[in-house]
Image 1 (tube, rainbow, N blue to C red):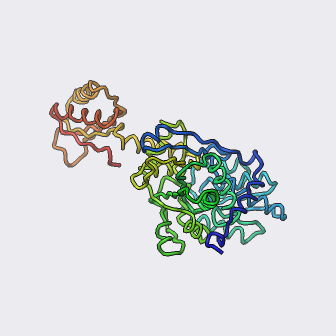
Image 2: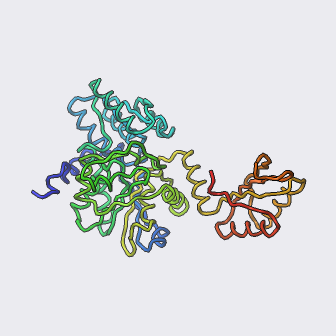
Image 3: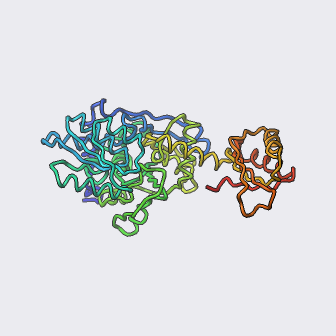
Length: 413
């Protein structure tokens, strides 16, 4: 028996899951879309898999329904799960569709939009814990104290097999692809997809992506056992599980060719790029695959590549944070501190200099209580909208040429 044949999830499990998921009220076939803009940037033929357009905004319903459908057929009618949001919605929808009750524990800092959506799909929501590991422990204890079945987000054969149905779909969408790029949280998604892809064509490269603030796969592979983080720190909350499982580690070892990490800055830029070029609203976890394709750590030049947009449940507060970060990085938002004589007319003069450079002042603050200032001096703090780095540099030069001391404080928080 080969190593692949000894893995917990086989392609036959995925095929049976596909039969159960022939219910378009729960899972629909999501489209692919060629992105010439992204392709031009990386020198590849790029096709986006639009799984963020799934009913719940993510792939999670595939695995949840595959498990819950089987369990309800055996007489189980109550389910418990832990999730930062997407798995929560998948469990809620699947349980409701199967006529069962569900309770989902979510971290206290979970996005409100995901909390509201989970309740709307029929689950009772309990907000517990400051991080996912604490939330998970609570949910598991809740299941142990009741007759409810615990629905793990990734450490479950039925969950992985359900996610694998997406891999079949991706292959059939574009069998000639060279590389598929898949975000990794706990590893259930990439385990299912990789199992399906490698069954159909072992030569297709499967690349996993983790956020730097929640990265565990490289160390887990090095040590040969799953590694768990005490805490995570990333805008990609959908893949901030802080660990993988023995099941997913074994599958990643066998079927995943490469794993790269991306920073929150790269993820933010990918979210903005997808908004601008593809006209798609994608959350941090969903944009991680595009961030990887754009990074220097993954070479896809000359290939046909499919990044998976696995989730679109982007909280509007997070969108605002992402936009500010990305626009600052592009120098389209510029924050300047200008030292002035604290006299009438100085603000007007500086405002005119900035306006003459065809820039818009978003806001300005007048600061006097600073030790570094001499008597009779002040700072003006401008936030300016620009056309980009070259325009921003020209504005700074103009202010300096007028005799002012100016500091670019865009990177300061």
